Amino acid sequence: MPGISFAPHRVRYAFATYGERDRGFKPGEAALILDHMGGVEPKDVTGQFYSSDPQIGRKREMMRPWVQWCETWAQRAIEPDPMLLDRATMAARHATKRKPRPCCRRLPNSGSDAAES
Image 1 (tube, rainbow, N blue to C red):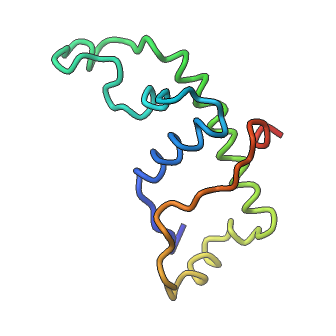
Image 2: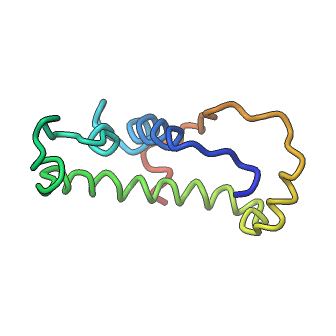
């Protein structure tokens, strides 16, 4: 979106924080997704590049509710302000940059089932 700063580490932070809090990931379990070489020995070239991922089933189980959670929050933002979907409007809104937002704004606690509806 024009005028919105983005960094991949913000997504990583959100996944680890909200995945555990709102999606029921076990403590530290986000590392299955976030670690670049999770579960593979650093010197195991075959495991790094050619072996199938033994944790892929659990990763799918984690990603499905995560994607649903993200889509729910996006829809909650768009409902009161449908112009968020209009690129030209968003570019105009952010043409004159106000003071920067904090790096990571915490979302209100949605509870374990709030994003499932």
